[in-house]
Length: 116
Image 1 (spheres, rainbow, N blue to C red):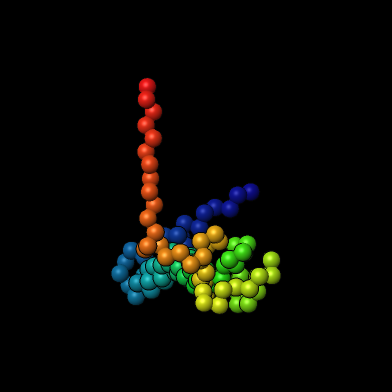
Image 2: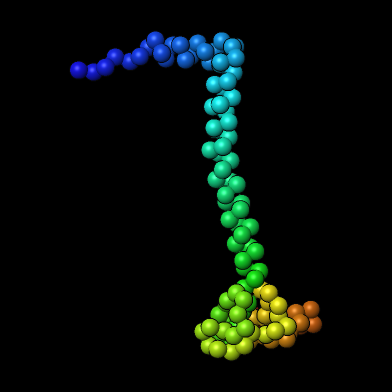
């Protein structure tokens, strides 16, 4: 046997929400606060996670020999070569281009046209 809907309690709740009473205001404020919390908490946690990831990425050091990245070590755990001490945290030039200043390098591009 099905239970009938509690129309009395539903009507009373709607009456409290519609009629401007302190109880209706309290319920509306409570519902609004819970909604803002449920919407804002994932955004806050996502922002905190993104900032944590960016800070962690800056502290990674790249091995000039093999390209392995590690935090807080003096030697590469993969190949055993020492990290560049002048690179500091998060530094090091990419493998294959140690000591190249990008502002002094010129790249020449030649265009080859097909003759039909």
